[in-house]
Length: 103
Image 1 (cartoon, rainbow, N blue to C red):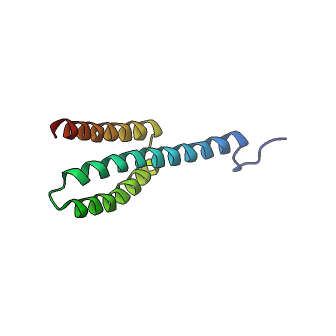
Image 2 (image 1 turned 135 degrees about the horizontal axis):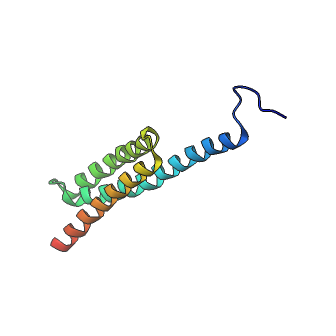
Image 3 (image 1 turned 120 degrees about the vertical axis):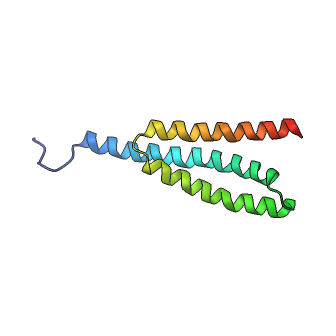
């Protein structure tokens, strides 16, 4: 049975769905890690009363998470996006570590 013209094959449809799922998981998982570390770093480093710093950092973390998800679907290559989110998470982890070592 020949494939009809313009109708994607089952294998290409599975690849497309797998790409979407991979981007969604990378955006959500990596975005959550980046947002959590950014929130922790901002909450301890913003020059305002502690309660206001925590609230501000938490609100900003929602924007960071949304930005990572948008980035996951806007990037041309899944690998480059994943490396970018991992580098961002590593930078934030380093900032948290340095801040903990300094205090």
